[in-house]
Length: 497
Ligand code: GLN
Image 1 (cartoon, rainbow, N blue to C red):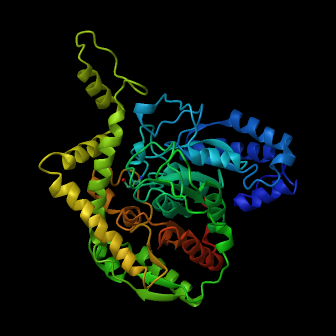
Image 2: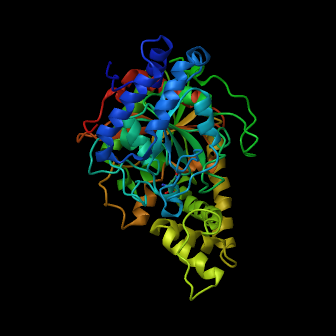
Image 3: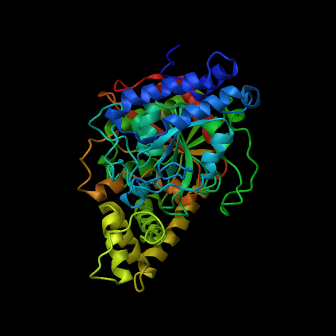
């Protein structure tokens, strides 16, 4: 049995199954062996569905003819644990859902399986996707495969670590304010947040419904395009999913970006929240060098102004917490999930709710529910929530105006590379400020991709972000792919795998 090439992409694996060089079962066994060897140190997975995966792979091999031309036949995939998987525990990394087994699949998960993918397990994340480091998981943090004492970012940190460590070529994540792109950047892989509505949210445990979007974590941009081909499209179960036709995203990857105009928001980069020291020197350097690479391929760099973008973090933490406080009201111990033990001295229903929520949610989730309840309450609604919605519109308009002159806007994905585990847990504001470059794409519903753009002297990955017009995934993917062809940063592998 051959050992899988550690850098195997979706494209390579798929081809090896199609040509008959390898069977789905072989690939599945090797993948599970890698997970067994590496995951104890990383903790990328909550649940590994080994038996189910092997049975599924055997089905694919048995029915080879039927599956020959499906886009993901035999490709192992990992699923963030806030996406429902029928018959497989789905916790959102919360004690509240520690034993929850959904009776249905998220649409994105069902689409992967219909395309021939083999789910190998559920990945760790921040509780209910609230966080930027995966440290808010009720089940312990995930470690960064590039430096085990550092976070992989978050909230889709388990998905990012799994792909970076070559435990799966594709993982699904969710991105409400950067949770796919930031961990992708911190782990040296590609993270794609599609346009709001491009991928059905059915079966995603809701955090902030007007911002949440499901997307992919992969090694390459081409793989991100393959994954989007499968998961994108209208879904009767999600009224916000877009009816727009789904193009073949791989067809957009021509390598030709001559004449493309890339906007650079220099003023934001110099004066973002946190001040001029906010961006790490090595991140700024790698970003500048990457811009030169785009220019050498024939793209034009254009200075753009996004005057309201510096308010994006404040706006995001008002809108997201308001929506979260409403969405999380359903976890009351009555219908499913954790319930505080019955206290026979106290038969009031309200007390059962209170004890369930006090015991089931972790500190960050409670902080957000309280913030969100506060900003929605009478007397504060106008000053906070309504104001935030108005500024949200201004931020979206800034982008619309910029897109009259440019085809995409480039920024670093994260102002710093991966930070040490524990460094920011006591300082939520510091943690929130790190979302400065990612949240505005969610506020505007825009597609955005993070692609590796280098390493620090200490060997930590750095990511570059491209934000595009609504439904213009083809352009952001084409630009990112062209850059990747010139640089191939993804081929470097972390030592800790
Ligand atoms: N880091 C952001 C937050 O904590 C984004 C999370 C996300 O995208 N799910 O809310």
